[in-house]
Each structure stands twice: as C-alpha cells, then as structure tokens.
Image (cartoon, rainbow, N blue to C red; front, top):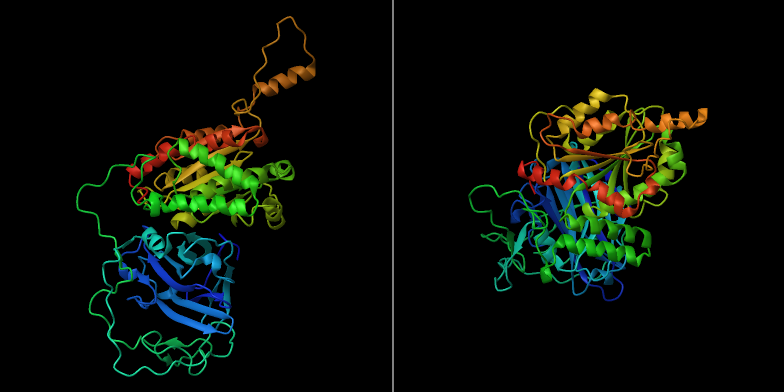
Length: 561
C-alpha cells in the first residue's frame, strides 16, 4: 500500500505485525495500540494497549509480544474488529524507538494478517529520519464497515508526543511506575537464538524469554498463529502506569459550554503543544514539507506553501478537516481532461488537502450519468491521476449532481437521506465540487444541500464555462454607436456574449443563496478556464466563505473537536 491509501478489511480478528531488520545495532521498537472514540481521543488509560498493559478490558485488542529471529524482529497486536465496542471508532497502531531514531531502523514494515496468516495489507515505512515515535496505520469505521489506512506519520517528541496527541497526559519522571510482583516459580534459562522462520507465526519450541513477558503458548485451531496466555505475574491492584507514567487527561470541570473558537486561537480539542511549544499539527506540516523537499517534488511543495499563505491569513494554518473532491465526468468535460487542466486542478486541491487532512490524501467522487466512489489521491498517486482514473471510468452522457452528493454524505455521515436535526462530528468535511454543466436532478440536489446543512459539511461549487459572472470574464466592450453597421456574425457573437451566465450556472447560484437551511453551507464561483487562475487566486476563492461557515458550525455544535 502507498502511504495515505486505504482499503476495506474484514470484520474479524486481524494481526497488525510490525517488522524490521535486526542486522547490526538497531534501536529497539515497541508496538502499541490506542482505541479512540469519536473525539479522536482515548476514553481512559485503559484504551492504551502496550507491553506493560497487554490486554484491553473488552478483549478486542491484545499486545502479542515480540519475536526475534535471524535477520528480523517482529512485534504485533491482535485487533478483533468484530468485538470492538460501538463507542470506539478508530484503532491506531504505533510504536516508539528506544536507543535511537526510526531513521536507524532498517526494513520497517507493517503487515495486516488474517488468523490463518493470509496478507490483507502490507505497508513499507520509508523516509523516516529523526522520529522517535511513529504512527504506522489505523483501522477505522466508515459507513458501518471497517477500513485500514496506511498513515506513516512520525513524531520527534517520542512516545510522549504520540500519546499526548491522542488524549493521554504524561506525568513527570518523578512518579515511580508500579512494579509487578515477581513470579512464584524460578525463571528458566534463556533459550538460544531460534532458527529463521517465515511470517509472524508461532515461535519454535523453546523460544521466548521467560515470564512475565510472554506467557506460555495456548493451542488453537490455527497452527500458524498461536495465541498466548496472560503474563505469569500477579496483576497489580492499581491502574497500570507506563514509564514514564501515562494516564488519561482529566475531564474538564463542570460549567457552561465554551464559546465558539476564535480562528487563529487554539480550538477546543486542538492538538496540544509538543516540545518547544510547537503543536503536533504544526509538526506534521513541517514533516510534510520536509518529505516533499527530500523527494524533490518542488511543484507540490510550492503549491502547499501557497495554500498555507491563504490559510494563515484566515487563521486556519493548523486547521484539520476531511477533504473531498467531486469531479464531473460528463462527456462535455472531455477537452478539459485531455488538455491536462483537470489534472492541474486536482493537484491544487490536493495541496489544500495536504494542509487540512492529517491523512495526507483527498477522497474523490465522480458524477456523470451516475455517481462513483473513486478512492483517494495522495502524495504517491497524484501524478497522472486523471489519466489513470479515465481508464477505469469513461466519460458519461449525463450530469447528475445528486448521485455523487448521496455517496459523499453516506461516506462521511453514514446516510445520504433527508435530515432535519443537527448531526455532529469531530471534524468538518470540505467538498470541492467541480462541474461544467447543469444537473438533471435539481430537486434531489436541493434536498441534499438542505439536509447536509444539518451536518458539518461545506460545499464549494466551482463552475467551468463561459459566463459574464466568471472571475476571469473579459471586460465587456462598449456598445457600438447606433449608426455603425455590424455584420451578421458580429451581431450573433454580441448576442451570445450578452447571454453568458443566463442559464448554465443559474442553478448553482440558487444553491449558494438557498433559504431555509440550518446553516449556509455552500459557496459558488465560476471560471471560464481554470488555467486563467493563479494558485493564490484559486486558494482565495476556495476559502471565500468556508471560515465563516466553520465558525458558525462550531457555535451550533456541529463540530465537536
């Protein structure tokens, strides 16, 4: 899997196995998992599963321990998606490096395996440098199903930074961690180095350090992947602490709900500051720019920096939102695709998405005669993306806005049906909706815009075509003197120019001004040729009404983070 991509996974027990080469002196890597609620935070310290707290109370997540073999070390967690509690929406798999950085860990890879050892996903983690903690991937719910996303996000602030980002407060080093009681039986001698083995299967006979680390093998129906018993030491009577001690952040004091955030100031639920006062969101953006610079991607790097200028001016420099691109694939768009203008637009929308979306990708939806989910576009897939997309989805004879809008609302909020009550979520969704024509589904489109006004979803409509209201429309020429004769061709052209904008985008203007909505959740601009717009001008247009809607959505409780 490329970084930022995602795929559906079966709702069953899966092993997330992190492996690395152990030839030479390599930092030790400790894998952990965090169970996150809709807020994007853990509910308590019990939602942090790692080597010193190996089992979640629900039985759905378990740290399985480390295996060492010739040339490779593996550490894994078991995630039983069928047993995940309804309040948990994401399970992130991360790790910390002890005695060095991840840039010194060779051959780092994450594999997701079924109980019988079949590969579901494989993700090679490259590009690491000074990071001492890493978020490898995450399992997340989407429309009632489970998906896995390859994340590959590092933290220079170590496990402390990763833990703090997900709501676990770190106590000082003065707090002594609780020590487990020694086992009653004498520890056996350390076994010799085992022979090489394939995959993350059961250890060979005699393998493994003595309890309390692993416990003894428990026979299962699956010969390739044995489970392990509980550690053979007495369980501490108090809550387990991590050295240094980790515990859930205390709940806020009772009182009235906080006022809507002022943009430019940290919003409720924003990522806390890491070492040196730099927020973790800011650190992710710095890491993004470093990654683009290291790979020599000057074009996308410059685009992200231009997008950053526009966002900083609006106090959105560290704002987080999910970003979707909705593209018209009707036959009339043919020249725009063939000329590369849609591809260039995709890259500019991606630049904005990289600043907003922590997953470094933009979800893509298509509409022509029907609606389609087209996956996502990200750092490793954007080049030549439109050509590849058109090989799978041909241009269609029709333009149905509502078909794609239904898919978008169902993807992010579980339903594309009518809604008359507010529906909140922890992050907003920004949709860039691009079309060159009128829809065949006016009323259904109105219904979607009306219903989505109760959701944290913002529609930015962009029309492409001739219109007197286009931002790049030529200045209208003065009318000729009455006595000046014109050719038939000149009169026809003058008539056409005078009527530009009288029909093509009238419906999108209606959606922009539609009354009766819970919040004004749409904006519209049109352009005759997207190539006429400079990057800064396009980003300014894309952010024309979004900041105002965002502030209102926070104030009305549509956004909970």
